[in-house]
Image (tube, rainbow, N blue to C red; front, side, top):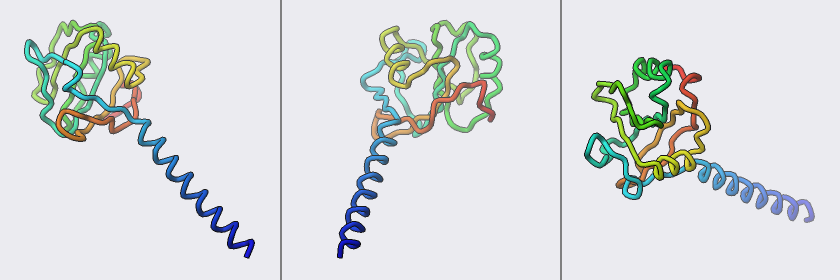
Length: 146
């Protein structure tokens, strides 16, 4: 009788622990709502069209990073965000969308996704409408091979 009581308690504790872990892992990934944050594509406001994007936050003043960016071959559309907002040499590729934003929004992106180094790279996927959810860890471009 006491064994069944402990087994029931142990089972309930395992279910609670699994639920807590799932909630922790779900909250670990961040969301971005393009309706709330304004990014500019040339002179137009960027409106996401794809279901999934590879987001790259980088520094256009770093020549090594720029060379690596040009070598990326990926079927997922790339959303390229330049920290310095200059993008002296545009990357002419149909799969790459170069966006700019104000300092306020850039800081929000850096804080939301905990970007500590550039270039950083991560995937986002559409949840609904203009709401996208982070779909991978944050990687440093130097450590990622395609």
